[in-house]
Image (cartoon, rainbow, N blue to C red; front, top):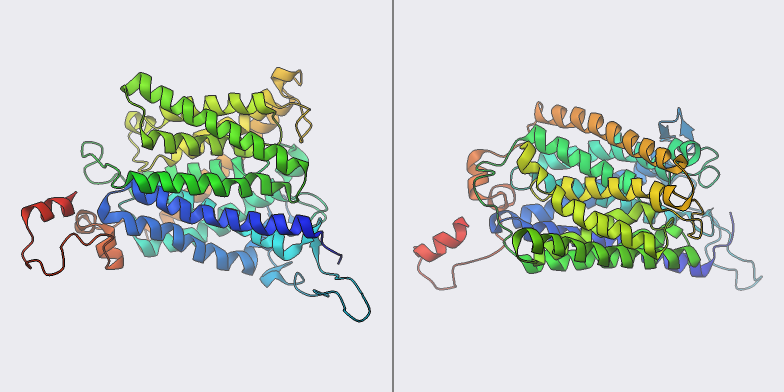
Length: 448
C-alpha cells in the first residue's frame, strides 16, 4: 500500500492507451495489405485477439506473468487470479481528516495501471501472429489458437523477460534476473516470440491457393500507411512507457525510438530503389515497422549513434529478409517473419554490440569495450524464447488443426473470408438502384 506519484501515473495511463491503439493500427496495417475480399477478416483477427487476451489477462494471465516464480518457468497463476489483492485501499484522500490515499502500488504507480499497461503488450503480441496466415485461417479456430497461445507461450515468456525480482513478486523471471539479458520493451517476448509463432502457424496451415504464382497485391495502401502511422504513434507508449514513469529514461527511449525508425525507413527505401528502381509507400510503411521492432529491445541501452546503426541495419536486412519466403517456400502472407522475427533478432543481438554506458541501461557492448559478455546474454535470451515459442506453437497449432480444423475451404478462399466467415463485405461495389445483374466491370473488381 502506498501513495502513487501522480505524474508517473498519468504518463502510464496515457502509455497504456497508446499501446492499445497499436492493435487497431495493426489491424489497418494488415487489412490494407490483403485483398479486398479478406480485409474485414484481417481486421477482425486483431480485434478478436483484443477480446480473448483481455479476458484471460485479468483472470490469470497477469498472475502467470508477474506472480511469484514457479520453477523458473511461470508465475503463480493463482496469486493474482482475477486481480485478487490489487483492488482495495483508500482511493481518494479523506476530505475531513486529510488522510492520503493508500492503494496497492507497482513502483510509483497503482498496480491496476501496471496491469493495464502490460495487458496491451499481451494483446498486440498475439495479434501480430495473424499477419502470417492471412486469407486462409478460419476465425473460430484463430480465437481458440489465440487463447491457447497466450496461455502456454506468451504469459510464461513475459514472466521470464518482464518480471523483475522485488517488483510484483519476490522472485521474477530468469531472463530478466539471472541471465540479465536486456529487453527493454519486448524484442524477445513480443517480436521474436510472435515472429517464430507466425512462421510455425503458416507452415502448419499451408500455403494460400495459388501462391506464389498468383499475385496477392495490397488492396488499400492508404490503409497500410495509416496503420503504420498509428503504430508509430502508439509505439511511444510501448517504448517510453516501459520506463514505468515520467522520467529521464522515458525521454531517452523516446528519442532513440524516433531516430532508429527514421533511419530504418530510409534504409528500406534505399534498398528498394537500388533493387527495384522504385521507392514505394509499402516499403516506407514496412521500414517504419522494422525500425520500431528493432529499437524496441535496445532503446534504453544505446545512444543516438547506436539507434541510427540499429535502424539502418534493420531497414536493410528486413527489406532483404522478406524475400526469404520465396527462397524457402513458406507462405508468410504479410511478412511477419521478415519484419518481426528478423527485426526482433537484430535489435536484441545488437544490444551486445552497440550498447553504451551513457544510455540508461548502463551496459557496454562489444564496440564500446564491453567484450562479449552482454552479447552472449542477448543471444541466449533470444534463442531460448525462439525455441520455446517454436515448440509451443507447433503443439498448439497441431492440436487445433486435428480437432476443430484451422484452414478455410477452397471455396471460402475463393469467395473471400469476409463473406464466408463474417457474412459481410468491406465495399459495396453495386450502386443503389443498379441492375440486379452485375456488370463485367463489377465482377472483375469483386474477383480482384
